[in-house]
Length: 308
Length: 291
Image (cartoon, rainbow over all chains, first blue to last red; front, side, top):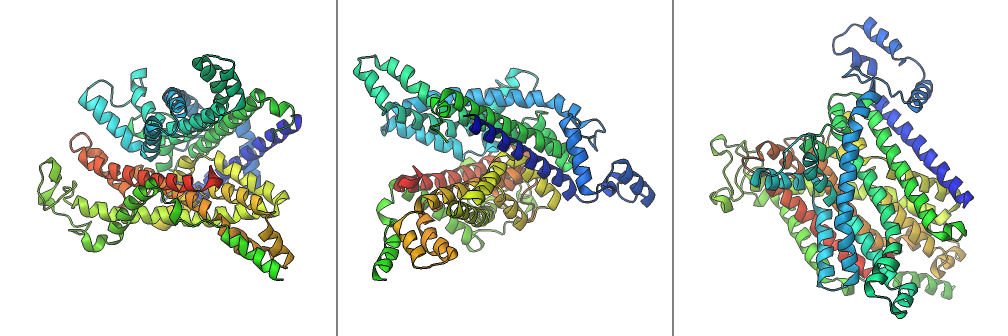
């Protein structure tokens, strides 16, 4: 188990390192920063001054090492556009996106879990087909269309929910529904297949043979085992939600990291873009690591050295 | 020698045909996709107007089912361009980008996966690492910034998309190559002195076709969704080209007044992606290796 743990941690670190390299290269790809910073038509002396000021005259490797060293201590540079430290700008916007992500994944799980269990219990019947159709539609639904459909329905027709902004919980209902619809299909599928595997297993047959009530068998014996893969997939989906909330945040005018990054891209504010890529990727790596560790903790085969 | 040859041949005959697994959902999903594709290809001839032709006197005409006329069956947009014609032209570019991105990412992913599964050891570790890195990258953010940096020509969008869609190809190609390694027809080919390249392309690749077709259909759907999201955010297809995502982006300013402008292309993306997924479900049900 220790060997697996070490290997898993090393690979997470290596992945993070590569991502940092990629996000550093993003900034370099954008061309000569000094010229871009100085603006069009500025004189050569000023460009040179900026180049020295930002350390852009030094070798790439040195620049990368400096940038990485600073990033590790929480200093992600200054935004070209706002002139403020990038870390402060992100710290102000991360909570909204996290709230949105947590709310969406909670909505997605509360919808997907009963649907998946029900489908597994009624395998290959009409209700199962209907649930699969729901999953299929969720997968095919472009987030921007579902967002507008929700706006048209709940904000314009019924006048129940506010159209945009992020002041209260009511503001986050529609965006998180739209995102949840996207995360749901994977969760439904994993619940259904986990449940149908568990229901066909020996321990469930034993439990049934002992004469336990069907309800007890489903909840206590089958569901607990079906939940393990669900947690892993939910962690992955949560990571994807953080990066994928750009569209939803743009439509609902939520000033989270997605919307902020999208703005930064149109303003060529590359320290911000760089930091966004790094932050979201780190979240994803940490989430998948946590999911793996959880799996390890729950599944005794890991401690016995039977699993990979 | 004869025994070797017959073993070599067996590798081919193990490959299942398509006809007997063509289920109802494959057929239903497939026919919608084919119908849309045929309309897209024929769009220059069947579209009633040019997708760019503006008639400023005929702006925002509603579609037939909302009280419009048959002159513009799906109405006109804010610049008086015929919506049906734009939808048809958009279908062409949407499908073209989806297919193109999938073909490129298939080339990347399949070669990486096959090499990993065939040579194992270090090669496999490296490929596995690449897959991990790719999975940890926030697709939307990196894609947006790449397109923002490098400009948004159709070819570039296709290439950027394919940088992010190869992972599933690699995973599936690797695992099946691993399974096939010790099969008789591969051993026979090795014994007959075939080169690694000949074995990979001639013996293993044909056996990958079916499961990889499933992955490919999934990725076409994925690519279409990503392209439309990019275009929606203004960093994808740009006017005068038309894609369904771009049509939604142009319609979003009118969403509170003329919601159909947004709902028609939105529904088309939904139907197309849904049909592709349905087709894929049917294929998956027929191939046991992906269950």
